[in-house]
Image (cartoon, rainbow, N blue to C red; front, side, top):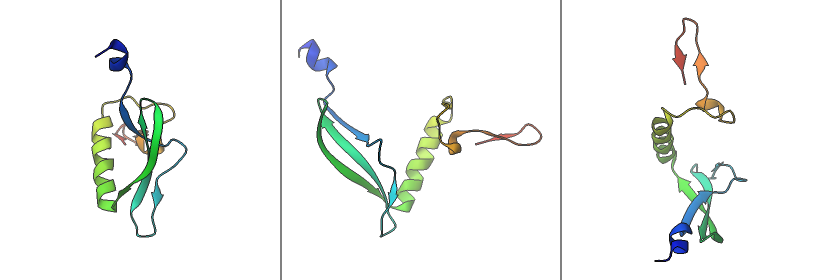
Length: 90
């Protein structure tokens, strides 16, 4: 394998930054993903999740992000809340 082939990403699936999560008429959540190969767009497709599946993904991400510093542009749910008595909750 050439060094260029190792450095060039193959397939990638990422959220479409300009699209938000939408609630479908059937109650499911839909997140639009883009699929690229070596940087070229191949397709966009929705990732559809039931509410229960979305809750599991949310909980897993919260757990994984627990020790990460909160960036300044993070959504409100990632910012700590200082309660009287010094207790901190997220």
